[in-house]
Amino acid sequence: MAVAEPLLPASGTTNLPLGEDLLHDLVIEQALAAVRTHLGVDITYICRFADNDMVEVTHLCSDQDMAFQRGFREPVEQSYSWHVLEGHLPELLPDAAANDIAASLGITAGLPVGCHLAQPLFLSDGTAWGCFCAIGLEPDPSLNLRDLAVLRAFASQVVERIERGLEIETELAATEARVEEMLDGSAITIFHQPIYALGNNEPVGVECLARFPNTTKRGPADWFDDAEKVGKGVELELAAVRAALETLDHVPDGKFATINVSPQTIVSGELEPLLEGVDRNKLVIEVTDCQQVQIYAAMVEKMPQLKQLARIAMDHVGTGYSSLRHVAEFRPDFLKMDMSLTSEIDKDPARRALTGAMVELAREIGCQVIAEGVESAEERDAMAALGVSYGQGYFFARPLPVVAAQQHLLGQAEMDEEPDISPEETRGTPEDHGQPMLKHG
Image (cartoon, rainbow, N blue to C red; front, top):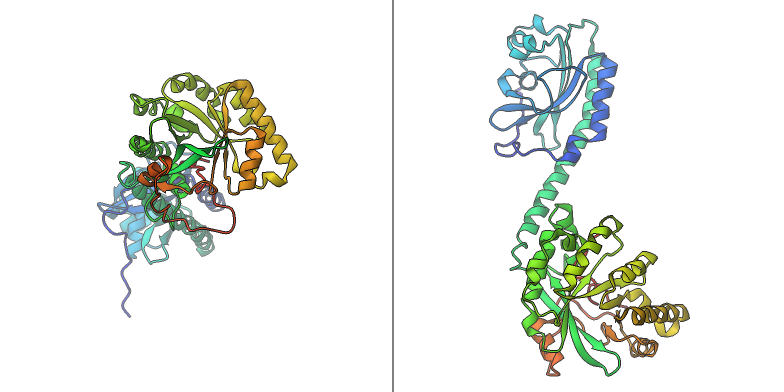
């Protein structure tokens, strides 16, 4: 019966460096250490079959000072792993020098290799990814099939970790490619959600909301979460900011537009150049996720410079003590009440008490309060009675295409509302109410 040739990785697929999570996988490190201890060998390692007919060491456990380290590469025909895979060498070699093929390999004398055990690592599709190997610097005639069985048992665990790690890396590569396509901003669409004065029920401005392709399957938060995963959160956010700034000409004079910006982007130093030359009276930078204490000091340092270019709003105020502390420190122009306080405030004395305290704080520091998530006349009236200046939510308008929002602000007939969101009997999602355009955890 013919024996099938082992399936090696396709050319062009294995020169990419492994991700840090896979390179430092704890399960793999523990497997290497356990096999080394059990077999009493000097070195345990994992290698992969790389491009250009090379074998590369990816993981290693040893206390030897030698050139054979992680990242070591050699041609396949000079490696034990390839010869074991091809059937030229047995998986168990108690005395490497006694085997003609093993003795011919440069590493046998160079390391030296006294004894060697190897177990090829096959992925679930049959691909021979590499080998789990063990080396003793001296021959060891006591090594037997039980020792090889131990190696095989740990190799099965290792290949599972490798396959899962490769899947994650493939997913991240696809995510990065998807995010990269958004970075020039051409595929980002901006919607405007009107903000109303509660005193006279007249529109005073809008919040800019980013929308991406396939909105019904992937919301804006998903896109920004993905960008964070691949280290491009600030880049994607800046692309959305640029797209939002391009819509400001559609905001009528005397009205304002808020653009969400995370603390990471503020402290990056890349935001200010985008805001140069923008009408400060029309622009409000809405700071999201102010709970991030790790960059709080840098935020404090950046705030005076940012205030010269735009007015400042703080988002999600009222959700924690730290946010109120930041309000006192930053002294913004607007406080945006978290929509959790707005929900049924007309029926909840506790929410009214918290809102009243927030309004009093705003008066003390000279700013105005915007209530998010207003969905009923009762909520609007309760907010107005408490002294809240502005409201935003379904009761006034859903997010609108830019031109439709412009007509709305001017009191003209509206175009269709945002097409990717259907009316619901329950409260709208945070994104539909304008929180947030940009999301960072």
